[in-house]
Amino acid sequence: MRPTNPKDRSKDRRGGASSKPRRDAGPSQRQLRAGELVRHALAQILREEEVADPSLVGASITVTEVRMSPDLKHAVSFVEPLGGEKAAEVVAGLNRAAKFLRGRLARHVELKFTPDLKFLHDQSFDEAARMGRLFANPAIQRDLAQTDDADDSPSSEDGAR
Image (cartoon, rainbow, N blue to C red):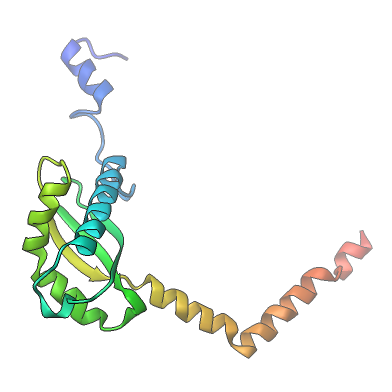
Protein backbone atom coordinates (compact mmCIF):
# COMPACT_ATOMS: atom_id res chain seq x y z
CA MET A 1 0.00 0.00 0.00
CA ARG A 2 1.46 3.33 -1.06
CA PRO A 3 1.36 6.42 1.12
CA THR A 4 -1.14 8.96 -0.18
CA ASN A 5 0.89 11.98 0.88
CA PRO A 6 3.71 12.72 -1.64
CA LYS A 7 5.98 13.92 1.18
CA ASP A 8 5.69 10.53 2.91
CA ARG A 9 6.52 8.76 -0.35
CA SER A 10 9.72 10.79 -0.85
CA LYS A 11 10.85 9.92 2.68
CA ASP A 12 10.35 6.24 1.94
CA ARG A 13 12.42 6.38 -1.27
CA ARG A 14 15.30 8.32 0.24
CA GLY A 15 15.47 6.28 3.43
CA GLY A 16 14.26 9.16 5.60
CA ALA A 17 12.29 8.99 8.82
CA SER A 18 10.60 5.69 8.03
CA SER A 19 13.83 3.73 7.41
CA LYS A 20 15.29 1.58 10.16
CA PRO A 21 18.72 2.53 11.61
CA ARG A 22 21.72 0.45 10.52
CA ARG A 23 22.82 -1.87 13.29
CA ASP A 24 25.95 -3.99 13.12
CA ALA A 25 26.10 -3.38 9.38
CA GLY A 26 29.69 -2.14 9.52
CA PRO A 27 30.99 1.16 8.26
CA SER A 28 29.24 2.92 5.41
CA GLN A 29 30.88 3.52 2.05
CA ARG A 30 31.23 7.18 3.04
CA GLN A 31 33.10 6.27 6.25
CA LEU A 32 35.43 3.92 4.38
CA ARG A 33 36.17 6.50 1.69
CA ALA A 34 36.84 9.26 4.22
CA GLY A 35 38.98 6.90 6.30
CA GLU A 36 41.18 6.07 3.32
CA LEU A 37 41.48 9.77 2.46
CA VAL A 38 42.57 10.57 6.01
CA ARG A 39 44.95 7.57 6.11
CA HIS A 40 46.76 8.67 2.96
CA ALA A 41 46.96 12.27 4.17
CA LEU A 42 48.30 11.23 7.60
CA ALA A 43 50.93 9.02 5.97
CA GLN A 44 52.06 11.94 3.82
CA ILE A 45 52.10 14.33 6.79
CA LEU A 46 54.12 11.93 8.96
CA ARG A 47 56.56 11.37 6.08
CA GLU A 48 57.08 15.04 5.22
CA GLU A 49 56.48 17.06 8.39
CA GLU A 50 58.71 17.34 11.44
CA VAL A 51 56.75 16.75 14.63
CA ALA A 52 58.35 18.36 17.68
CA ASP A 53 57.66 15.44 20.02
CA PRO A 54 60.94 13.71 21.06
CA SER A 55 59.45 10.22 20.81
CA LEU A 56 58.62 10.81 17.13
CA VAL A 57 62.00 12.16 16.02
CA GLY A 58 63.41 9.79 13.41
CA ALA A 59 60.52 7.34 13.81
CA SER A 60 59.18 5.73 10.65
CA ILE A 61 55.46 5.17 11.20
CA THR A 62 52.99 3.17 9.13
CA VAL A 63 49.33 4.20 9.27
CA THR A 64 47.60 0.87 8.68
CA GLU A 65 43.95 1.87 9.04
CA VAL A 66 41.73 4.82 9.91
CA ARG A 67 38.22 4.21 11.21
CA MET A 68 35.84 7.14 10.98
CA SER A 69 32.80 7.78 13.16
CA PRO A 70 29.45 7.90 11.33
CA ASP A 71 29.41 11.71 11.48
CA LEU A 72 33.06 11.86 10.26
CA LYS A 73 34.06 14.07 13.19
CA HIS A 74 36.27 11.50 14.92
CA ALA A 75 38.98 9.28 13.49
CA VAL A 76 40.79 6.40 15.16
CA SER A 77 44.12 5.78 13.44
CA PHE A 78 45.90 2.47 13.83
CA VAL A 79 49.67 2.87 13.54
CA GLU A 80 52.74 0.65 13.66
CA PRO A 81 56.29 1.97 14.05
CA LEU A 82 58.88 0.39 11.80
CA GLY A 83 60.09 -2.79 13.47
CA GLY A 84 57.39 -2.52 16.13
CA GLU A 85 59.90 -1.08 18.59
CA LYS A 86 58.83 1.51 21.17
CA ALA A 87 55.24 1.31 19.95
CA ALA A 88 53.76 2.62 23.22
CA GLU A 89 56.06 5.67 23.19
CA VAL A 90 55.30 6.42 19.54
CA VAL A 91 51.52 6.12 20.05
CA ALA A 92 51.72 8.36 23.13
CA GLY A 93 53.74 10.90 21.12
CA LEU A 94 51.21 10.85 18.27
CA ASN A 95 48.35 11.41 20.72
CA ARG A 96 50.25 14.36 22.23
CA ALA A 97 50.73 15.79 18.73
CA ALA A 98 47.15 15.05 17.62
CA LYS A 99 46.09 18.72 17.54
CA PHE A 100 49.11 19.67 15.43
CA LEU A 101 48.44 16.75 13.08
CA ARG A 102 44.76 17.70 12.86
CA GLY A 103 45.76 21.20 11.75
CA ARG A 104 48.03 19.79 9.05
CA LEU A 105 45.33 17.31 8.05
CA ALA A 106 42.90 20.18 7.45
CA ARG A 107 45.24 21.48 4.73
CA HIS A 108 45.43 18.09 3.00
CA VAL A 109 41.82 16.89 2.93
CA GLU A 110 38.61 18.56 1.87
CA LEU A 111 36.06 17.49 4.45
CA LYS A 112 33.34 19.62 5.98
CA PHE A 113 34.86 18.97 9.42
CA THR A 114 38.44 17.95 10.12
CA PRO A 115 38.14 14.93 12.40
CA ASP A 116 39.57 14.74 15.90
CA LEU A 117 42.42 12.23 15.85
CA LYS A 118 43.11 9.38 18.23
CA PHE A 119 46.01 6.99 17.70
CA LEU A 120 46.17 3.32 18.70
CA HIS A 121 48.84 0.68 18.21
CA ASP A 122 47.86 -1.80 15.51
CA GLN A 123 47.89 -5.26 17.09
CA SER A 124 47.36 -7.14 13.81
CA PHE A 125 51.12 -7.47 13.14
CA ASP A 126 51.71 -8.93 16.60
CA GLU A 127 48.77 -11.30 16.14
CA ALA A 128 50.07 -12.46 12.75
CA ALA A 129 53.51 -13.13 14.25
CA ARG A 130 51.90 -15.08 17.11
CA MET A 131 49.95 -17.21 14.64
CA GLY A 132 53.12 -17.82 12.60
CA ARG A 133 54.93 -19.02 15.72
CA LEU A 134 51.96 -21.21 16.57
CA PHE A 135 51.93 -22.87 13.14
CA ALA A 136 55.71 -23.40 13.35
CA ASN A 137 55.30 -25.38 16.60
CA PRO A 138 56.35 -29.04 15.99
CA ALA A 139 53.26 -30.39 17.80
CA ILE A 140 50.96 -28.36 15.55
CA GLN A 141 52.92 -29.43 12.45
CA ARG A 142 52.49 -33.08 13.48
CA ASP A 143 48.74 -32.61 13.98
CA LEU A 144 48.39 -30.87 10.63
CA ALA A 145 50.31 -33.68 8.91
CA GLN A 146 48.00 -36.27 10.48
CA THR A 147 44.95 -34.34 9.29
CA ASP A 148 46.35 -34.18 5.74
CA ASP A 149 47.02 -37.93 5.76
CA ALA A 150 43.46 -38.65 6.90
CA ASP A 151 42.04 -36.45 4.14
CA ASP A 152 44.11 -38.21 1.45
CA SER A 153 43.15 -41.78 2.34
CA PRO A 154 39.63 -43.03 1.51
CA SER A 155 37.54 -43.86 4.53
CA SER A 156 35.80 -47.21 5.01
CA GLU A 157 32.40 -45.60 4.45
CA ASP A 158 33.37 -44.24 1.03
CA GLY A 159 34.73 -47.64 -0.07
CA ALA A 160 31.52 -49.47 0.94
CA ARG A 161 29.29 -47.40 -1.30
